[in-house]
Image (cartoon, rainbow, N blue to C red; front, side, top):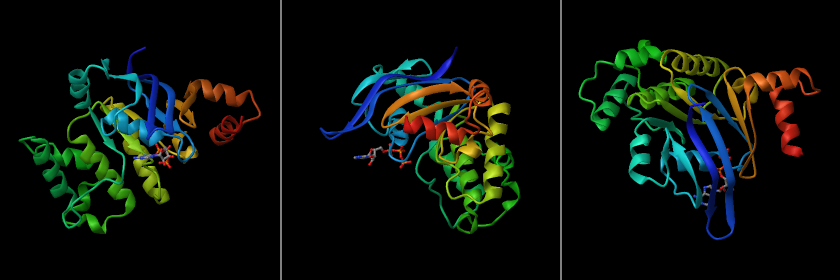
Length: 245
Ligand code: ATP
């Protein structure tokens, strides 16, 4: 199996007492849509921040596209292949979607803006014309965030709670965008979400995190088989049972 991210006994402490990740192991297969599931405060965002290089790890290691975290240069290069929307994506609110993307291209040093219309089309924002981002719905902003993340042609996109606060149609559009990018561009996704019903419509793999530890990793197919032969009917039931064990 080819993994995009692997972590081995990853630990993260804040200060001397607050242990947030505790020997955290994870295996994200190439081409997967990996759902990272855990309650608030379980450590999902911290893990994502470490992978993106925003936070240093305390001990243990991870590899990203085969580059080990101990090899600073290799991991820095590997990070060029990832994009993340971790906090709310930031935009220029008084500009259109297209102008925001032009800014992003400039920031990344991409000389040609040729691909921008294709990006807008891909995330369903091509018809927004001169409309300013400040007047976008939350769902449109979320999709623009993904378009911005796509500007560097990443092989892996990390999304932290992307469905949060989205209106139902926004959720559907985001879901379709993610599926299309996964299929057409072979982009791997790591998505944290507590909207499990939605996540279960797209995820190919799951990791369940409880109190800083990955307590189970399972493919969607295996989980489905497990659910059909047990008293749990939904991902939500399964999750609640795991968390309370
Ligand atoms: P949520 O969905 O609520 O963001 P999460 O699973 O993403 O949950 P994290 O954001 O990783 O959880 O936070 C895990 C723990 O680490 C929490 O107790 C949080 O308060 C703490 N924490 C996060 N960032 C910091 C920081 N910079 N300094 C100190 N503690 C932090």
